[in-house]
Amino acid sequence: MMYPVNEIFETIQGEGAQTGVPSVFVRLQGCPVGCAWCDTKHTWTVDKNHQVDADQIISISNENPTWAELTSKELVDRLAIYSAKHIVITGGEPCMYDLRPLTNDLNKAGYSTQIETSGTFEIYCSDTTYVTVSPKVNMKGGYKVLTNALNRADEIKHPVATEQHIDDLKALLAERTSQKAVNICLQPISQKKRATDLAINECIKNNWRLSVQMHKYLFID
Image (cartoon, rainbow, N blue to C red):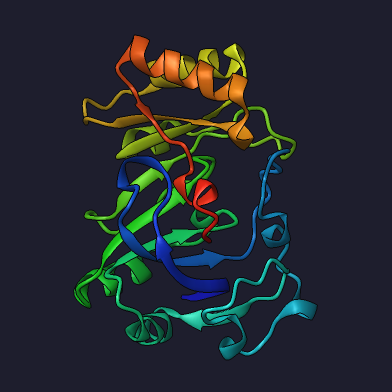
């Protein structure tokens, strides 16, 4: 299995229930979902004209559409330079790809793993991988959030700006057929006060968690 990697960098996880955990982010290239507020639009297309050597995507915050193709083993080997033992596979939309080889190899090498996904693709990963579904409803790409993804989630981290987003989340939660416990996190879009106040009030009302994108407040990657 080959993975198109946009960037690899070490930082602190700034979102969701894993906030504060030292992490290495592996960002994969490619996403057809089309979120209007996406802050990584440079990862949407996998254009062969932007393919580069693997050394050009290591420890560099690209913010451009370059990517390198690596095998699971090559990725695991390259992560040895970092101190963090928690690997966050993000995108783009990482679940466009079969992540079982990568997450299994990472787990065998002693890493804990986390996936950040929109929930619009089937999730293929190791059993111990912590799955964060950030549901993207009625986006430009026309993809629907899958019930299977909601059932597999260890965490549902929902971006909110309006009451409609709360209604969307409750509708998604009603679709879950799993009895598995799941963390529900509300994440204000763009740190706007109205969105933040709404998220705080709904978290208190529903006994959910607040996710404030700590890394943006601290001005770190």
